[in-house]
Image (cartoon, rainbow, N blue to C red; front, side, top):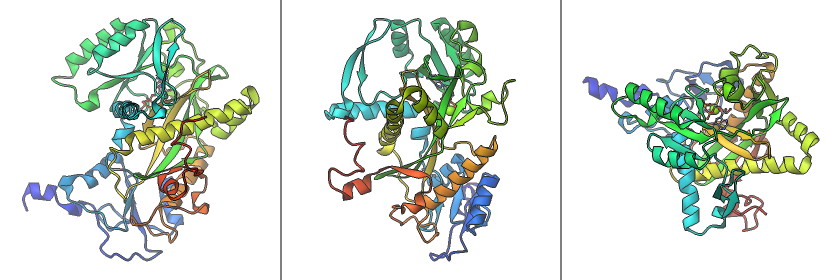
Length: 433
Ligand SMILES: Nc1ncnc2c1ncn2[C@@H]1O[C@H](COP(=O)(O)OP(=O)(O)O)[C@@H](O)[C@H]1O
Ligand SMILES: [Mg+2]
């Protein structure tokens, strides 16, 4: 066998030879040697095997999943195999592609005259007049650099006193992020980047530059964002579920918009991976507050009505971000994916989508975290695996109410189809009243 043919051999990942898998004989493999995965699957009586053995369920890294689905590999999954990613999840999880897809989605709706794409004229505090989407204005204004540099400069000049945040497309956990409030800083960065990255930036090396949400809702004077978990079992028809136990992630240092604090990431970035290195990090609560407690806090301080509205708006933005990528996702029937949504709430209680992670951290920093993540994995498996407990890509993916556990149904387009036009499942197709 030549080197090349060995490289394309499908035998790297083990298939399931028999089409009949007995209960109690379900096998899984994982790239993530974490107890939250192993203990969950062991409790179901599943046995762990290697990636090259016969597996039914693979909890993989995104890279291994892409390898499995790559054409060169020639690997074909059988009916009794499932994997925890969609082949091109990056359409949603890469910062530049997410923005591109949402912009395209809004334009398409606009072109077809859909009322969802309605716009209104708004005058900003600085006197600038802009056209804003009424229902689909949920991502901060964003450009991809270097490609959209000129467009960015044009936008920047309209309100030169505002702050922007630069984020590398191919990184996570707050790495490589910085804030800018002067064009000269961007120019300096651009010169240095050009010197380093030659000759051409690959798409992974590009940056997004987004309007910095400088009026975040603060609790105890500190900035936070929300981490919500969204399970998608199909993109066409769209089937998505929201886990009821998300959490807020707090900065350790009080929020401060002064220029001297612009480079202080403990003030501006809510990532646990950043904050845990801060001197004021509290390892008991890990800078986290459950969404339930957040909800209670808001009901107490702002009232029930606006709180309900905020949570409804978060569901709305999740569903529309998924619809924005539904047409470009490879909707492989063996795939499901649990996304970590990062959402910032501003002080007018408007939620903003910051990014979507295809591999949200399963690391537990606190006792509550451990409980939450164990339950998350347990509930994911019961939603994606048919009632007989055997992974099966042919299943219609309509779980029973019991199987949902602490997931709630966000949208199931198949159920909407089945019911009449006034279906209780239909709320995301209409404009909100
Ligand atoms: N437009 C923005 N306005 C204000 N804060 C932001 C904005 N974008 C990101 N952040 C902050 O930076 C953090 C990291 O950004 P994110 O896009 O989630 O990148 P990463 O992949 O590094 O986590 C967010 O959790 C949030 O606290
Ligand atoms: Mg993030």
